Image (cartoon, rainbow, N blue to C red; front, top):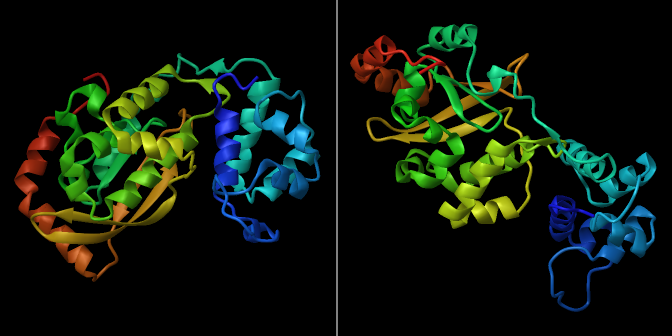
Length: 297
């Protein structure tokens, strides 16, 4: 059975986002009680029986062939990230219980010394290192000025998702807060590997689901996302809105840590505003550098 409901939730959420006409089926002549495709429509598109697909969605199925999984992925129009997630969910149903995440890797909870030096050396480019759970493990002076000083928070609060949904100042920082919040929750969903049990991630999700109905609603959407590169609008009361680019890089030899760097196009208004912002906050930034947060803090 699908003991935690993840497989059922995922497949139902993928069905709900598709209309019959999106997949070449005739439009429904009558309003549907639930949005999206019906189970029988997915079964037809995938070339399997309705009973088989229903049992798969409920987690009441044994081994599933690669051919069938591929057909279902195509029927539901899954992207690469979603395909990988589906296969991991199916594996948990057929390959035994989820394995515990490795606890001997200190890199899960701290940034190694070399990363700290790299992040600091990138000033005045705002840069930070995050864990797979989006805990902020390292941030340079520019990132603290641009976003917020996570080092001044209690350790358990140094988390991008928690900050977004529990600190009103985060909503001021992002003019496009709804989009940023949706993508961040989807990225946290994507980081939740079905094959590994991560009690700390589960605890974070549970706490935020209680503290923020908005988080709970977005988590229930079961959308997946992976930060790689893009643009973000960030508001700072000192200089106004900055249109910045970001690049996110996976950090080798860690359990999902990432390095994110913000830049502004040369000669742009954003570049001028970022330079002005960091110049005005130079004394505070210098003080932050003197009181350096270390992984053992």
